[in-house]
Every structure is written in C-alpha cells, then in structure tokens.
Length: 172
Image (tube, rainbow, N blue to C red; front, top):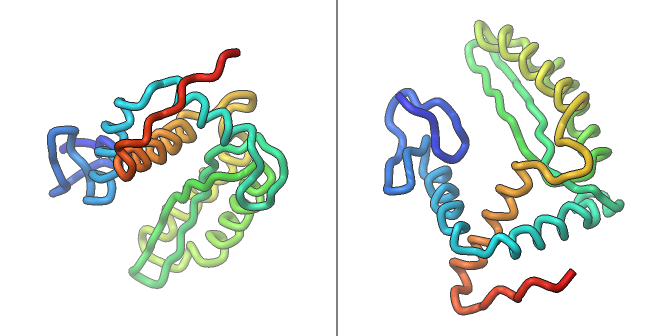
C-alpha cells in the first residue's frame, strides 16, 4: 500500500511502477515522468515562466492576474452510484470563486442521491469548496501547484523539442 508519486492518491491495489516511482494509473505515471524530466531544465527558466504566468492575464476572462491554480470539488449520485472529483484550473481568483460556487450548487443539488457515498461525500466536497473559497493559494506568490504545472509544461516542450535551447536568464 502506497501513495501515487504524482497525485498523492492512496493506491490500494495495482497501479503502475517504474524507476521514478509508483503511480495510480498511466496518466499519473506519464505526468510523474515529465516532472522527473523537468529536473534537467534550469531553475531560472522555470522561475521566469512561473512569474510570466502568475503575473499574466487570466486565461478564462482575460483580466489581469495574479493567476494561479485553483481547485473546485464536485459530487453527483444516482442511487448506488456516486462520483466525486477535484478539478484544478488555471485562473484568477474571481473566476475560481465562480467555479467553486457553481460546484457547491451542483453538489448540493446532485450529490445527495446515492447511498452510502453520496450522503458522506456531498458535505465533504461542499466543505472543501468553502475551504478553497476562504483560502486557496497564498496571495503574493505562486502556489506549489502552479510551479508543478509550469514544470510539466516546460518538460513537455523539452521532450517535444529537445534541440531548442533555453534562453539565458535576463539580467535584473
């Protein structure tokens, strides 16, 4: 019994294993391998891209940042079937609040209808959204989730275009 090396989900049975760790599924394994590749990218390049995204415009509404990764949590149920998820999204705080309030509304209406998980997961997902609304990423600096996203994107470009050099850091 272990946790996924990428998403930290508890792995009860199965999963995927390679030299970089144990993963809950193939998608997490590929993402974990990209994170391992990101170690070859200069930290100055990661920091440059991180600041560019953080201080850029919101990809959802176009308003000025800060832009970060915000999570929303939903649950829906139908008798004995219950499905819950947590979705990260890159956006400004205003767009994140709209998504989180929508997730609270969705879960409040569709979450309760399953036994036993709907009754237990609905208040939990609603509470998680309230926690995200009240807290979320720390203002003033990019979150670790945003850095993880930037590392993944940089590693993906590095793998797809291995001959393209990274620019030298700009002087301050």
